[in-house]
Image (tube, rainbow over all chains, first blue to last red; front, side, top):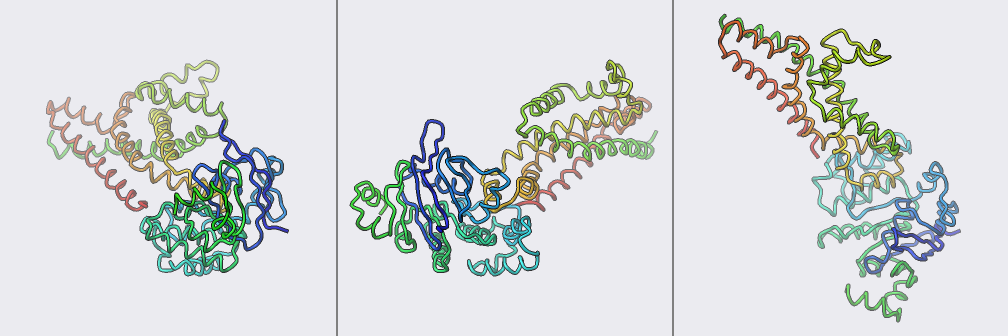
Length: 247
Length: 216
């Protein structure tokens, strides 16, 4: 069984059809980079997987359980259980500014009664150490750099033990010299076989860290395959035009 | 009558001023918060009712509202006798609380609108419920954003308390007027101004402290 099965997603904002027909199968351990020109529906696609956008048609099936089928969603109460398998990291970090780093990491697991407080505190230290920010445990988010904030956001997502992590342009809001530290953390996660979907403009990173590339354009999947297939010799003029522009 | 005798009398008047201030603050802030929630629920009818309430409270003079609560409520048809408040201070305090709750409701609504949409999304993808998000993520930020406006409102309130003299209560300003009338010496007004200034200053320092403590 695949970890996530997405069939024929459709989504419109008013008259604008953003997702026209998106299908994708995600296997365990996949690191899928979602590429494409702006306005191609990448972010909307990613956000719809975790119920931040509502699709108009199609299926989203996560670990065998449907979130929606034929555009029909399961009841609110049951969604939480399905969505619990996924975590998300945003372009603008969205750390909770009124809490220090430790509380940022602890608040959701405590709310979900995931474990007792002491073991969660230990876990928080471990996860922060993993992203290289153990010394920031008691600092406030406003004192961190963008790259550090994003690493905390990743740590916060990891605290919920997700099976799938979604990244929505995780480095787009960062100064160029800070993107590396965030990409390194993502690479480490991929070495640990974390399943990830990453919307990004970092083509080099996608080539290196992803095992599959999903290339979207105009609400359709233009290509899906290994980085070699999609980026090196796709033979597709639209993809080549895009790569010429960004490289 | 010499200055040494004014001061204790005026201080006594201050007690009522401070009492009214504290009671109004204590009840109007939570009530305002309730109105904010009702105003931002999805139920259109409730929104409209709260909107109308805020319009009336902000759109008519507080002095008139004090008169209405003390003199007018007993004449409300059918239920008037149940609404009658005989104690002047209670009647005045009710008017103050209802009036200030409307202002606080708007201040908190402004704070709520300023909380970034990304905060709700982050809480959601972390699996927090709507209630948990509201109380642990949104409200603390809303309060912090609203703090300077709340401080402003508190300083307006400490001076507005003088309106309660209109229904025959004796506060700092009333005591001062009596002294001026008796002594024909208007310098008592200057002393009263100093009293108000000190109270406003204490509030200013207190809110500055809160802003600093909860800064992020």
